[in-house]
Length: 144
Image (cartoon, rainbow, N blue to C red; front, side, top):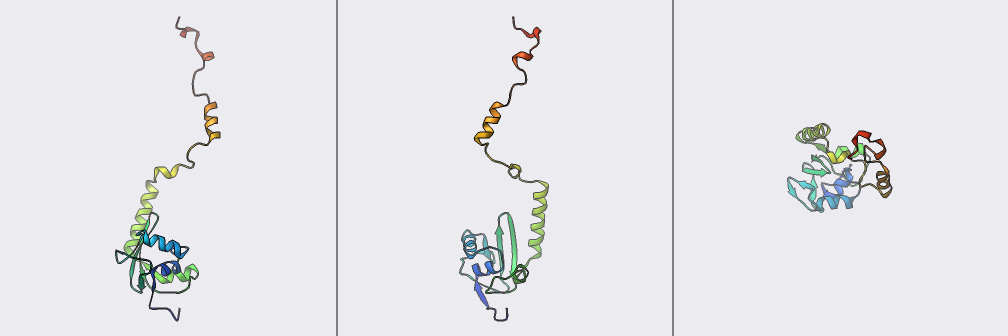
């Protein structure tokens, strides 16, 4: 990083810092408004400089990071983590959200399978839904 630039494109920085696997994914997320610089929505070509504060939302996880370095290359994860520092408020908010998800998980997340398949529906139809069959009745229950 000796010949590191003084500013670079936001989408390229997000890719180099390993927030997104490809620059195209970074561009899509920026265009959807999930990445902000200084609280303002931006475009992928926006230049970021050291000291800028980014708000990044990936799924349900929101992070606020400060740009600490710039790199033209996407390096290994330990090197990428040197490019930013997460703010203390962001860390506490992320941990609180993780604890809330642990204590009260989303009910839909417990569903392991979706709609029953045709084979599943056939198995359900074969299952005897009635607790009493005609052969199991008491003789004293005759309506006659």
